[in-house]
Image 1 (cartoon, rainbow, N blue to C red):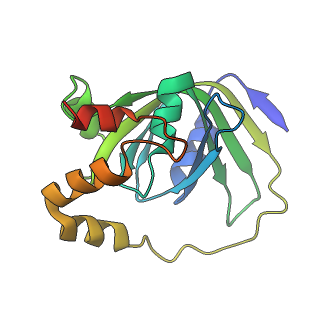
Image 2 (cartoon, rainbow, N blue to C red):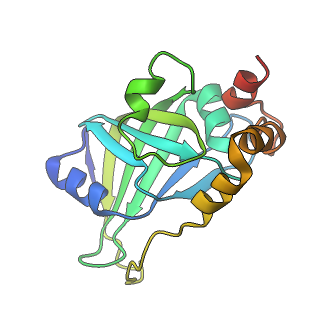
Length: 185
């Protein structure tokens, strides 16, 4: 295991080559649920050696957003599923940018025009950690799934906003999300 203060160019190249990454967060409450979510579809950008952002698309829950607002903590994990083994983690503190906020247009322009973008998570990285990844299986990437894009397009803008109200306004532990607050204005 090695630790670094920033994302190096080698780390950046590895991160940008991955088709899948994971985001972990947790509430402050010891009885709260730790969240771990897979992400894909070209939704992550390395902005600087100590800052990343990801476009958070509509999902069945919205845990990370509420956890970040509550305590700021977020961890990203990238695994080499082919080529030389490697696991890379980014330990960070995050903030949420919602549609309609001042930074939304410039940040949204960094990502492809995927439907169902509910927020952008910007994270300030304070530790980069690599480990061997020897136990991670060797997989081949075939293609991104289009299921989320098709589902979102079929719901339409009004349907997505209703889904956000029903499914993304609070965590499974009942913590209100920034998106839920935004929708109730």
